[in-house]
Image 1 (tube, rainbow, N blue to C red):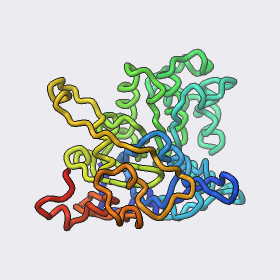
Image 2 (cartoon, rainbow, N blue to C red; image 1 turned 180 degrees about the horizontal axis):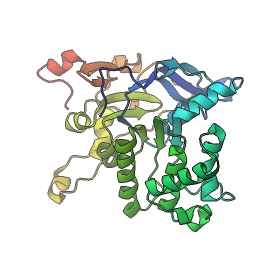
Image 3 (cartoon, one colour; image 1 turned 90 degrees about the vertical axis):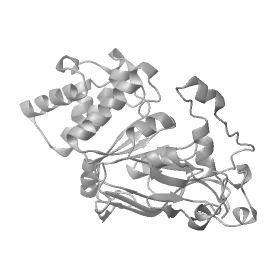
Length: 337
């Protein structure tokens, strides 16, 4: 669990990632995101497909350079790219790794499992000879595989086993922070819980910090200490996982949660589903207004003219909505929450 009295391990302010699409226009995949992640915690990141979650994760691992903003890791500013500083890149990747979404595409089919896991060890010069071999065996056992798998190729494994190899690869250089980019979405439902429980066990054992990206809100609640909700490249709500589920404040977050099925059939039948009308606006050259205004039942004039800031409306609970403020929450009838 995070200790929020300390300096955050990951501190992000005004982070942007834009892609040029021609004619001087920009696709704003990540737009002015602010986030803090504390050592030992899991920050969940949820939102619709295409909202910028995976792009955000790839910026944090420097697969993509950021367009603007600031990213600090353990109090130090991370350069936009490491093109001219290989030593800085080695130091950064030693601490920050990624578990990819698709275990079928993220493992080189021409490499054995031992080579895949050992590649990072070799790059960082952590172990050699017999110690390297023993470290690979140790990692395989840590993720629920065994040393007999070391000379096999990825095509010889199931999806769940491949993802375990991907997890072992990420752990090989003993990172402090791991971006989990929808690590179970490509797996059978029967395997998903095994991988989630493995990630939790590894976090407890190794003191890892996660950014867990997903679209399944039940999974995110189970594994996360706090949850950030993203819409069209911007964060609209941040709170503890219990708070998000108990008192959702942003209209978009409410709509997402209303779509989560309940295990109790009677409660599921009586639940009121929030249906969003209208289309998601284009992320190309978005204006300086609330991106959700065109689909929001509570939108007013200011929503179409000014972008709401992400502000703390309750202790530990941030919302980006003109209609959700401390004054509104203390009123007799704020938004129909």
